Length: 147
Image 1 (cartoon, rainbow, N blue to C red):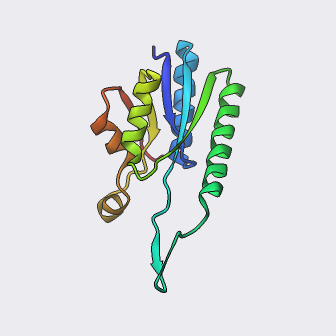
Image 2 (cartoon, rainbow, N blue to C red):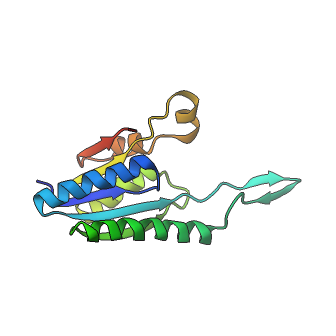
């Protein structure tokens, strides 16, 4: 059984399914979890001749990420599973390779994440975190598709 399981958390239904599966695996094998959320900074846009950042300031994204991780940590504790959290700022880097790198640094034996199942133009524009992880890691990856 896997003793060190990294779980990518993004607040989506598929990420919740991934967390639930990781908790089951950890319970079955006495493992521990690393809950990871990556903040991807918004790209600046040109608006009326001035550069601006759309949406919320970075501090709001950090706070939202911390809330997601805190809720996931509480779910782990309620299930009796040992877990820790890590909030990562992408700093312009792609999310998939960052998660893969974190898995190596933490010595994860398994990466668990939900996939959104995007296809076509959505996948082209938004990229695929799952694909980025799979292409850059030697750690086994468990992908959970949308329900």
